[in-house]
Image 1: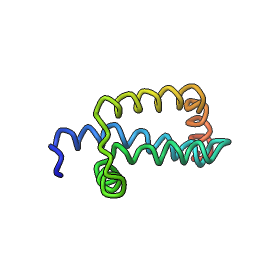
Image 2: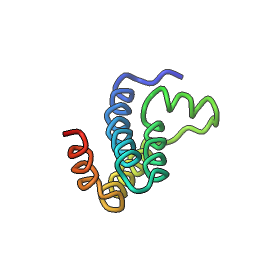
Image 3: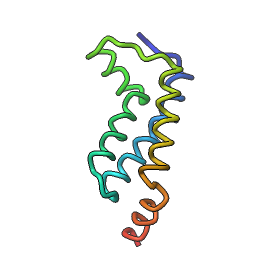
Image 4: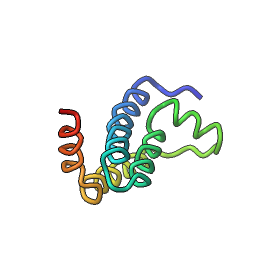
Length: 95
């Protein structure tokens, strides 16, 4: 089943930031499992990842559920994941 281009663009726009935040939490955080969980959750949004999900599970996720999941990811990453502190650590390591 082919998605419309608008939904694909939205998937990339929602998925890439979550993936990047997950990678930041994986490599510069104190909880690698948390970061990997966030990064894997991003693949529900990225079109190739979602196509793989559909192929393996045959479960289509409604857009409303994806938006709620996105809000939860952002809330968890900013609150529990302490994203601003991890970005500061990452930038300090890269200097």
